[in-house]
Image (cartoon, rainbow, N blue to C red; front, side, top):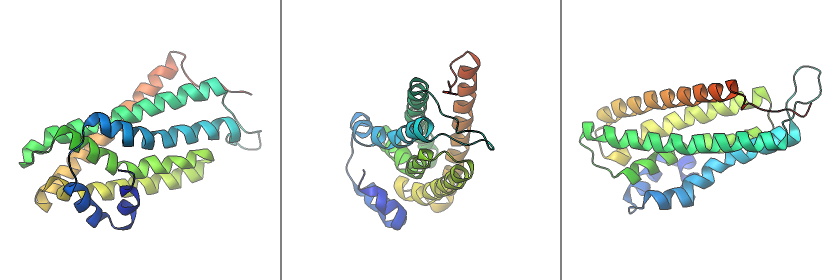
Length: 200
């Protein structure tokens, strides 16, 4: 899967065709060799950024997290991303029947992982946790993820482009719901005392 990352950024149309033509792989193998690696990029970057660099608020010294707190936050975000990919893959698999597509659950999880690749790579911006940098990189990653979704889903699922547009829009809507749910869960955890701890 990792060798497809460059292709998804340089020639996504052809790359989706190539991905579709590849053989089946189990969900376990997919997670062990691809999803676990890609999801670790933003988590590790955030750990480095929040413990070594910190972020500035006005003229005050940089705000830095304790190492233990950063590890805890990184692990929570890591597992949230893995769960998000699994939920999206499950929804795509369930929704595919509406459009007369019959992909396996493993292929749907693979599609969700490929589509989220820009978000995973965009997480590298967390190494330097500056608000404007994070906003610009995050916006670019979200836009390209949406582009990959709309371009890739009709090809990957073998459905008519018009059906693919409706299918992609449904997936996008569910993705936004999953994102809001993760954010709400984070707020709940912070509310019960599992929030970040600062060094100063």
